[in-house]
Length: 254
Image 1: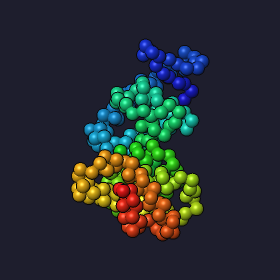
Image 2: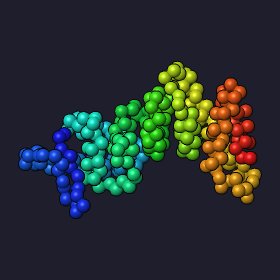
Image 3: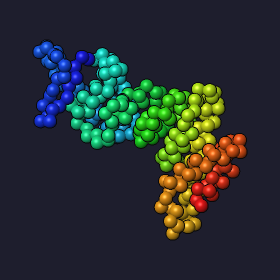
Image 4: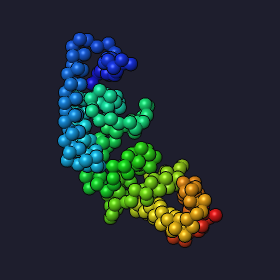
């Protein structure tokens, strides 16, 4: 792929670079083919799977075929995804995908999902995968995909949000390559348990003290709870356990 196509302010196609008439004709041919293919596959997949994670997984497999068919290099992928988003698909995607990184691109995330086995993909919802794929640091150690695969049950959306925040906090300045699989999975499990404890305890607090102003500062107290958990773990030289969770919750709600 040696062309880059965009739209000008009037909605007209602009070909960037010095292209011959033949190259422009080829670019037009590719765009027209993509319009037909993408529109049809997105419609078929939505009918079959709704906007679930399976929609994204199977769309990603199709996109992988396009990368090979049109010889799209890794360096050119973001531009290719942007062309599809802007010029091809009929879907309206309003989420800010950023201009300088491929990480938040919807089509890139679909492609990444398609590179995982289906059993792993189905462990999380589309929203949960989006959260994880957005957070590069949290998935930098790719063993997190192995951990997701071996989880016995689906993780609640609210627990997952807290898990992502807790993992981000824990991973600061840490090199996880020094951990064995077992050690790393134990860390993931303990952070997930920390997240569950917060959910259950805060819900009980809100039930016991429904008029407390502390309920309104949930996000700030959640962060304090997580920070305190890690601080107590370090000070006591102990694992993240219920004793740590309980003490941290009490301190966070003071």
